[in-house]
Image (cartoon, rainbow, N blue to C red; front, side, top):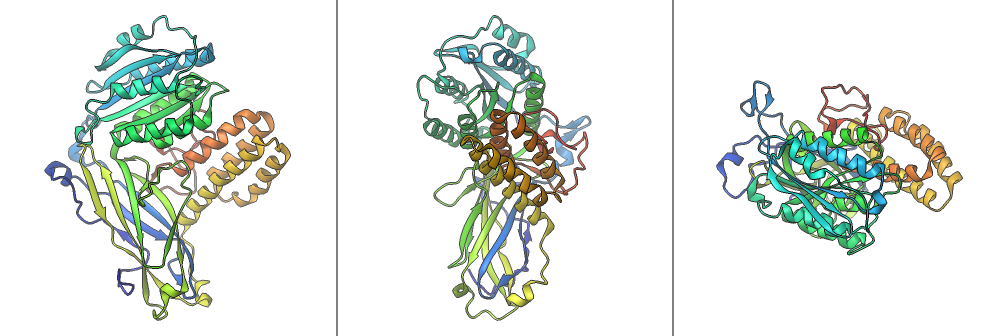
Amino acid sequence: MNNHDKTPSGTAAQPAAPSNNGAASASAAPQPTLQLTPLHAAIPAQGGTVEVLVRVQAPAQPAHEQGAGGPRARIPLRLALVVDRSGSMSGAPLDEALRCVQHIGERLHPADELAVVLYDHDVQLPLPLARAPGARVVAQALAGVESGGSTNLFAGWEAGAGQLRDGASAAGGAISRVVLLSDGQANQGWTDPAVIAEHCRQWLACGVSTTTVGLGRGFNEELMQAMASAGGGQQYYGQRAQDLFDAFDEELALLQAMRLRQLRVRPVASRGVIVEPLGRSGLVSNPDGWLGLPDLAWAAEAWTLLRLHVPAQALAGIRPGAPFTALALTLQGVDADGVQHTWHAAPLALPVMPLSDLAGVPADETVARRLQEIAFAELNLQVRELLQQGRRAQAQAALARAKARYASHPWLAGKLERLVELAAQDVEMARKEMLYASGRIRGRLVAQFESAALDMTEDTPKYLRRKAVEGQGHATG
């Protein structure tokens, strides 16, 4: 990489033509835009750190892919709904889960496929994978279901994944996803969260992703979140069906608007520069340097933050004001036809400035706001740890101290206010909310022109709305 490259600072680059397996229809599709935006568009001459926001933006859905009533039939869905009917799900949790399965069954399109799996210590398959079975068939599959038995969660989840095995390859095009509805209290078969999460990761590599829905008050949030994170899906929780309906409507809306999935970026830094991914908890990172991103919908943005550690030696010989090429990025994703593409972005080059001149370089508002979000996600985990240790007073004090820090960020200020209330009233649910809030913030899609103001409307897709509380159905805005 040439450190005297003349690429302008603050790169906002349209990726180059993708490499793919030769499918003509996919190569003709609108390409995503990859933007690299530094917090400050300069590098201190004596070396230092530079925070960079990586933004992958999908174009609006082309007119030729829309019909008179809106978007055309989207990528077909292949869903396996896996319901925990063990004894720990007795009562409201199981009732709500079954209502949610019926809710999804009523909203599938004719090209979609659905399977329903039930499990306790054994696995039952009341509805093998079938094309658009319809609400009546789904209701028949759920008739007479009662709770009982121990919880072989892994076996139930794996049975759901197995239903989607055929046709789940990258070339198939359809989206194959297991949706697990459970309290996560695995006590039979494989129970180690790390082992189960690794299996979710392996199935994701085969084209089957996993979304988890935590039910009731006592669900195992660590296991449920670990499975969704490793499995490339979403993570939800709730106690009431009306909250869970909102979560499933969000999930279906996202799947129906999917533009790119299995999205990942690989940062390549100049010699001597160290890349530190920020806020990677809950997102897939691979030893080979690839960083996982959320699945990307039309007209939405997936993002991540990097911190570049630039030593003074790397800047030796570069005159003040001259550009230093710090970073290049490769992007990969699978399109609606199941074709994997690779895009190479123009590198990020920033002028080298004396420290005295850096004070006049303004901070980018969007980058600063996203850095606040990552810091808030970390705060959630820190306070949650205090609550787990029984240090309730310290946890409440930490939340109180954070109020001034997030006062200028309406969404985070609102979430913080609700966390203060929840931590004072219900420690168990506060711990769950903090874990889910942290993961959802780190891996959320955003509207391309999202501002700090909560200006969302009913026309804003549910997967782009910002919730005050993750375990409730309504979204802010």
